[in-house]
Length: 320
Image 1: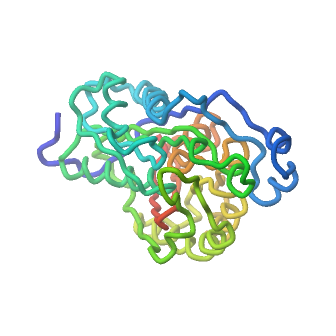
Image 2: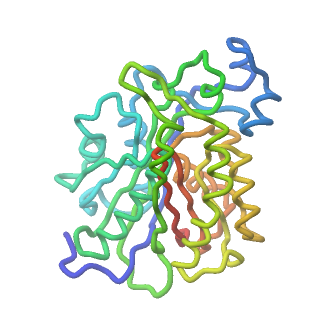
């Protein structure tokens, strides 16, 4: 049931993740393109990535991650009244992914829509979920980031095929009466003058990225956004237990972390084993880090998504 008056705050109850079984190592790529393990690691920090089967879809992966998060939350499917899927890699824009995912999970007649903010999509969707709960439009929200980038990559182009990968991550968001941070205010924005730096020209094209331009922008423009998210949440970076940015490039992650000054915080480096999974990368990393006990329950984590658009968004959350 929807809450007529909303809740004071929203919180995350649980995470879930899914990765395809196919592992593609740097050595595997070196057998078909002009590259090697050292070249890839030195530039993007990736050792391996997961690639979906040809018949494995964004909806399939989103359903797996969403089902895992729902089971971990202790809620029943009937408790969820809104499903949001963040993705930019559907084969077709109609129908959306969220309605199909909800149906497969047995969630009957929820609000359901997709968000395309590329690699910032999960943070955008999480903010929308929090606002819906606080505004009384929803009671429990399933938020999923899912991508099949392998379908949009030219596997002969070493500038992109070494980076992108497939997977899904999810979170269940619920109302909270507790004081303090559950899901903090979002700091978001866009740099529309740079839309051509990451794009897919048309439905017959592959993903294109001006790597150096994106690297310069990310390493100079984003740490103020991270600091703004902390400020809006009333949190000093030194209070953070974790910093979980979009897993775009390990060098970018490390550069932003240094400028943030979050001493003592564990910094997500899921990209080493998972690659760049766009909207899936933050929830995928969060789920894996919490499963391994790298982030303590109740600890504060700063999320920072950024990507094509160029869009960006950050918020502080309390880890369940």
